[in-house]
Length: 360
Image 1: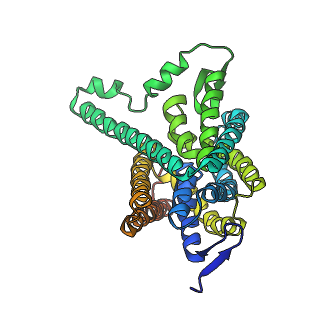
Image 2: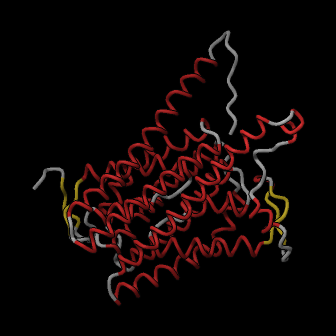
Image 3: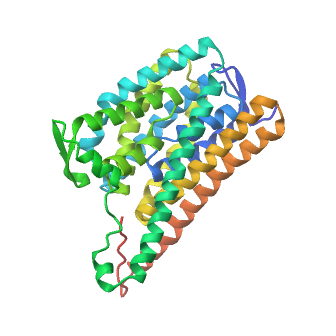
């Protein structure tokens, strides 16, 4: 037996400590940077590397809860959290999460729940990733047209307009109407907010995610939050939904506590790094990297599904390479950007130099 392998008694398998720490650190960086819990990556990763799907869903929720505490604290200090919106999100998120977890356990008794969850991952990851990439490239075209247009167009053009979908939802005047000054939102129906978080809560319980990989885009495109505020606020919702999710799955005996603790060791460090990097990368840069990562994660899950169908080890190896490779590359990009920009900031803060100003 490999000296770095340990036995996980609840899940009943042997697993690599090094692999758990690596997954945890990468997920921590990506979580703090994108405002996601990371379950959308940890669950497929654990399942690909040998966890039964129910344990691969329950175990990440414990890790997500732990790492989110540090990330929320960091974003709070940076002023990236709309606490009013974040706390309201808890109301229906917990209800949705409980419904989702019960559906998973019912499907587990009925047969192979893994195939259903994997295809749900493929659909959601691909759809969200593709839309965010589309949104980014539409922005590039708008920038190009503004640059080629008249000076008047350049003065009146606004590249940070609220998404059209968000504007339409804001026009639904279904009382009570509520405002979120911290996010610059003057009025939106409370029912819209509650419904959005009911759905994300259900997906959290059904797919073993904190909900952040859905909440962050939803806050940007449906609610209309600035990207940096959406990142911090989504973590508040992730913190509470993952706490409840961890509890409900643990009661049902589907949380491998040793694995969750090891994941958390790596994630706690990574989350601080990722949250700090947000201040150095503009909103649309965050969306671009997030969209690319979601698409590659979907490819990984598709490849794993081929392995499950035709039992060719080649496909499992490819799935592992895609998933971990994408996480490592994105983590490297974020850390590299943080290192370069923070160095520039220190140089500009030296006496005799003009202090840099970084826009969120």
